[in-house]
Length: 293
Image 1: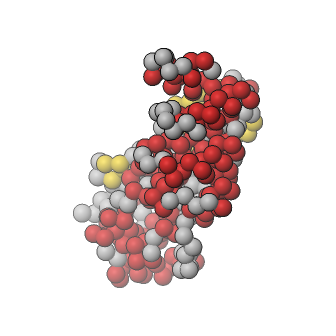
Image 2: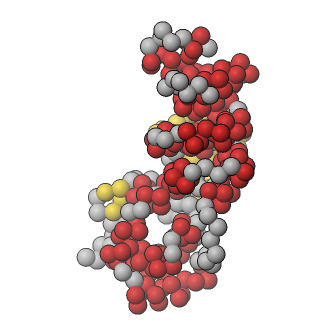
């Protein structure tokens, strides 16, 4: 506590102390972190808010509702939203706060992007952050008609631009032509491997068929941490995951675990809701030609 608040301490010492306060999860650490979160005269309000999510996610969400208009740096926004998604109930707490006090559109876009690219899309939070749409959502019942539209009028050039839209997070997870992420399968030869109806269905319902090796294991600890990733190793004492949100390997002792389950593909449902029908058709056209050029 003293190190976190001592301005005479080096920057890295104070940041480490703030992180340690979050791991303590005590009333005193909550008190100190709340005070530091509200002090925008220093450079420690964002680290303090991130640490506060570990101590009391509802208190952190309440403060986020007040402070969100003051957070200008996109990287800080991303770090804060990641910390909420790492806590059990964090997305729900934010949705409750933002339902009564909406964040600026640019902040909402960052939150949705973080959810999409990490497989942590929470539909309740997305609804709060997304303007009401009057268009009908696409479903698996639309697959035959969509396939026909892709073949008749899909535009691969426009579809490539849809794929690159940051808010969708496609290239954060998938590699195409040697560029992109490694969370999901490489899409470079998708058009030669899968028919158009499969591609349409995989976007509309990512859980329908999960490719081998890409099944996510979700672990919730007794003190409220949420981890989701690919299981690397498990024995009677611990489980090791490649956590998608942290983009790192985490080791979780079995004695800490409250719940462990498989949740399917990290690709979130609802991505098509962020596109017009034309954009969806063009995207599928582009994907269906990958590997054929």
